[in-house]
Image (cartoon, rainbow, N blue to C red; front, top):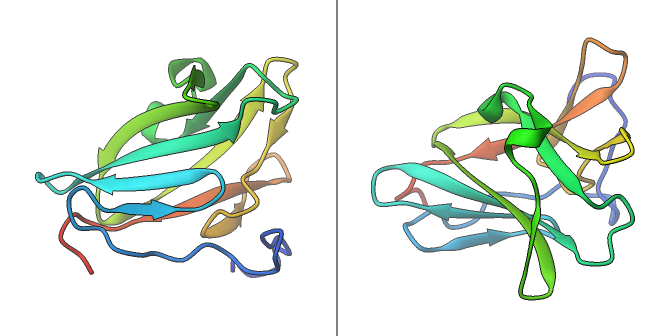
Length: 131
């Protein structure tokens, strides 16, 4: 956890990394990671269909903080946004609702202070083939 940032998951823990081999999933209530054969990782940000902030976008290091670039779409009873990123690094991100409210994933791997006096979520993306 980042120094001085007191954010935890709903169960008092933060999500931890699991199997990153190609095709294997890491599942938390809101994020799935699927390793590709090229070492990239596809992130699936997942929210329940009834989430009150819909429509929602995800903004972060991976899309130059443009929440409209990665919007959630309804698929099979959930709303999901998908982005493929380089593995082996960490990414900061946040969610933004259509009403302009920014909110965090309470199961992010960690949290870091941002320049606006709040905190950003942090996801630790391994590389395909890590175990």
